[in-house]
Image 1 (cartoon, each protein chain N blue to C red):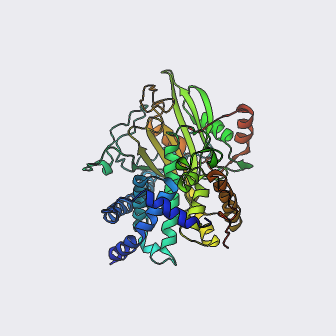
Image 2 (tube, rainbow over the protein chains, first blue to last red):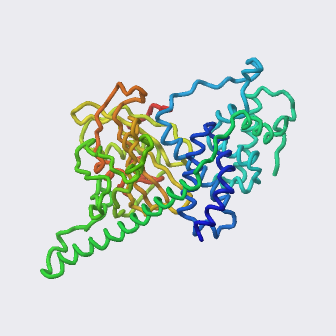
Image 3 (tube, one colour):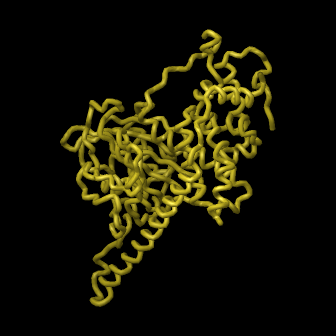
Length: 166
Length: 293
């Protein structure tokens, strides 16, 4: 019975989790692995998770921790990146950075904040809970990250990313 | 374009997702394995305590002597530079016989019957009885302080190549450092990180995990000791001095898994260290190299 509950939950959550993972890591294979690991951890704690107010929030939290763990393990294999292009308009339109490219230049925590808030449509409070930081940090980092993304993407229109939901 | 979500959607459309396949079923299988490992770890802790009580009982009971001779039975001595590894728990990863780099069998149960190519595998290999944390004045753990403690806990040898590494996701007092240790066979690299998983549901404190990463010479073997409060101390035993995908710069593994376990299991490790380590570390490593890895 518990397994059936879990499978129902997992089938509903898997696609969404994997999309969020992909937006943060830009790698479908890795996103798939991280989603599977996340769901495995949810399964291992399912008795507790199913009683939680929002199992999806718990799953998001685990996903983020899995990403952090994965990045830590991988970090020693990564070579130092050259600095990202400072402004998008230096590039021809067809080579211009996508939002995914730009998001990839942010630290993982900031990436998570952007994805949770603007893709998963979480409130500031819910985002703070998942990421494990204060509401003030979510607000300030959102602003900084959006500013950075705007700079990288070379957008000139003032309304770009101007929204700031609370 | 103020719509970030729409732009994300556009980007996702450029990179079509592969099918989910049997992801959910595989997560159930993996989740069951995690449950088993957790039960094993909990059983190991209980079994270790029982075995220790038995030993004490045998020593002190019939003869009425020996209790004083045992000192602190089991567990790690607070402030000692190592601490004894509780070997009452069977080690599924094979023997940790103290030979540097000797544990290569990689017989973790996750690999049995798994047709996939070599991937990192994590196995619970032991359970330590954790001693109490340090007393006295404590300061937030710095990379320099961590190196100071690490160099004191390492086996005898010449150390060099000190560096602080970039570590995303880690909070204050959770450094990630590296050094080279030469025990007479040339330098080998060791890395240590302190990390906290805030999710809950962590293995019981004292659980020791061995993660083997085939093809990753920098983190060839990683010993993780779970401390209280979700804190993990990871000690990585490298088989090269720098990351090189061709693996052309081999270096000896300078610690055995057992030695790494003793170091990572030292109860002094934490997000705060005795002030002495932090202060001396700052003096000893005033210009610590920084590395992205």
